Image (cartoon, rainbow, N blue to C red; front, side, top):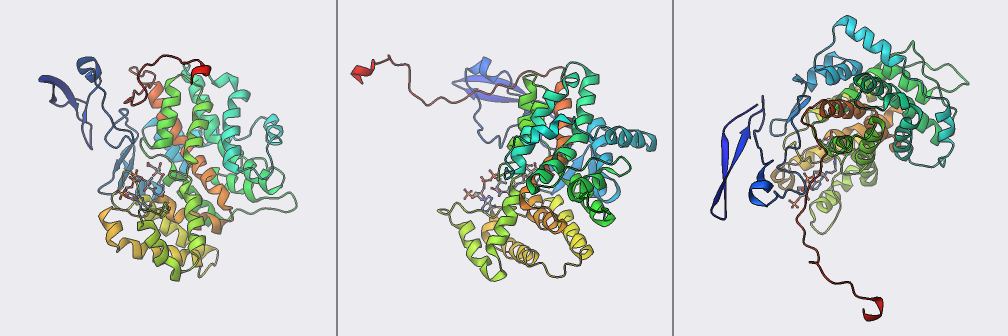
Length: 429
Ligand code: SDX
């Protein structure tokens, strides 16, 4: 897409830079030749004003609280579709026809088993390992088991690797959970839909029949839709950078999972629930609001704030509705954590500090309450985020690999260290 040009005056020299305009959203100034023309770099450590790539997958309008997957509003996809339909949409760019959807479901379903040797791989972990440590290790280990889909130059192998990850990450996630609770692994069951299959692999035990609750399965499937992709967030940028070196897709997705684990990113759902538990009651909220506002206190309201959303995260609204749906289905009338969350949100959204800094609840604020009610331990929350985001990472990785102008990502720096100096022998230091 093209636009007009911009000019930069440096040391009396005028540098012309093209302005590129997208289909919607902010235009960009192409600075690709800036260093060659000026000997200077741009400087933007948190990438607050930097577009790292051109993409057609996900669009976010942070001011309006809009999230589109391939142009479709997240609210409509969450309401009318299922997670595998969203996977197809993110990967292929269009909603599937009925026959395409049936074929995609069939293919994903038949990739859900993992190599039996992986079960022994898990035995190497301590039982008390954090499930995210297990996930980062086991997703990376997939490249040790599926060598026949690691050649990124082969479109067929790229497709197989993509299907394998969408299908096998839930199986690994369930295995990570079972391993930490000391229960036997449960194999996938092809007669179940994607999310029902995942719930059964997590919560079924050999000692009795497991019946999937369709309301919970639908709710979790919707939660996966909400988490599927989110433009160039930290973990997606990690996947793109890892992929730009030609690393195999399993290694790239493992790198994304490692980044997502951080509490400022996907780890916030676990941190947010722990925060609600620490606050404990509505009476304690003012104390924590004060801590969050105190510059000298590192405490932050987890699940609040966002680099892009300066309005309500549209996913948080759907998440809140799903929370009520799940608690009603489970007959949980008054969940003290939900009471704290609702009151905390009310107070924060009327507080000048949060209003001025445009801090709203994000997707991680309510997800923990819902997942805890479903029976997942807090340590599994980011694993579930990883499960859902795997398709977004793959779609973004695929788009990058298929971009003919793709090159290895290699940022520069502003160097403020020691200038060149002579080595001093140790006897003279
Ligand atoms: C996800 O990027 C994505 O799209 C991510 C994600 C996705 O789907 O991939 O949406 C998923 O990661 C959601 C975000 C989950 N993280 C949290 O909930 C952790 C708590 N929130 C933050 O730490 C923070 O808001 C970030 C990390 C989310 C955003 O950080 P920014 O954009 O770098 O903002 P900042 O840290 O510079 O904060 C701006 C100001 C600061 O005050 P000043 O220094 O300007 O005075 O707002 C304050 C911050 O102190 N602030 C908060 C706050 N978040 C920001 N103050 C109290 N509580 C908070 N949660």
